[in-house]
Length: 278
Length: 226
Ligand SMILES: [Zn+2]
Image 1 (cartoon, rainbow over the protein chains, first blue to last red):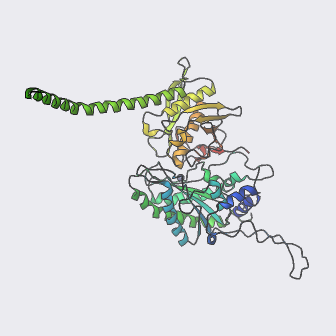
Image 2: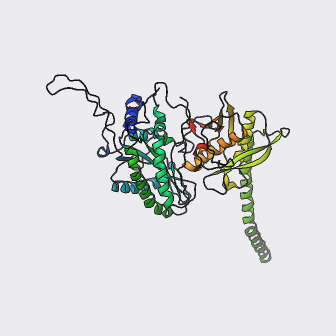
């Protein structure tokens, strides 16, 4: 069963739209019921490219339809994913610290920093619920001009450091016959942009949080795999600290660094692919 | 009862209370210790049941590389070389190296896999896919997190790559079942590249030290069947 996009690497937006358009309607129906964003935060529907309007004159006399490519959206939306929640506390520290709580606090810091930079922010979960990986992906893939940032606080690593991950390369020929890209591998088409975003963010974080790596590592993160947009995961170290205030003190700095990185990434996204065309 | 007898009885009872006060804590400590030993030996018995000793001393001792956490670099793996008897049969050989990897390094802080996890079975498919089936604690006792889970997978994949060349890719099962993630983050629905020769080149990385932060090409990359 293939749900796909054609030439997805060329247009981030087109790919997002088409992944949705062509995915299994039953699955999408299920995923859509999992949407948790308030209506005011809904981006324009990704399933209706406005520029592909069939030609018809006001007088009712048919005219030749004109097909213009959909306008390229610029980066305006950041989907923030406070990971885990509900019955899944994520990583647990000795001092009773739960990853699912830490990332909610980080998400609210990051939201404020991103809104200051002029971005619209959408959360994948509200309160302490725990949408599935696919529900979170469906929400992100329904946005245009968006990137996805998954937030984590791990159990290991040097306390006070931060790592920004992207998915590793998908080996072999990803596309199925006909050039279609399966829904569950949607991220593969966006890896180049995801890496650029991750490297900028890791660079900003390494300046502020000593001991953090200088270049962004990769990991096979389940949540990122089905995201049809540039996507990164940010993981703080760690919930194993003795005192929660150690982690809380990191949050504003992490939020500012990530927001700065996203603002620096915007021109890259807006002019992608380099040289225009498409 | 005459007063003299009563006096003796009182002295005897006081002595018994004194003796009990001295010996009761010792007794309690020794009961606790024996209970702990019993738990340990149950764990040992369970391990022995799960791991029939497959190291045959008549097999040739060969240099084996095991990948645990680096003592020098946070978030990196480092190879430790040991001489051990290894079978020429790839499935037996994979079981031998993974059992040794699970047993852990001398310094327990450098473990990458939970101490109570066990390898239940290992299969090698004709296409070079090694299927490693681990017991539940591989998922439930592993510290949750992107870094810890990716290091666990990498330590398994790199150890297989270094010692069992027949294994081209790795599929991890938990108690015979496909799991969506290892402990909430790393995707187990696909396979991981084991034999990276011919895959993504990573010439800048020293073979003895694999750093996820500097060697993305050497990481265990998920691979999905079309
Ligand atoms: Zn997490």
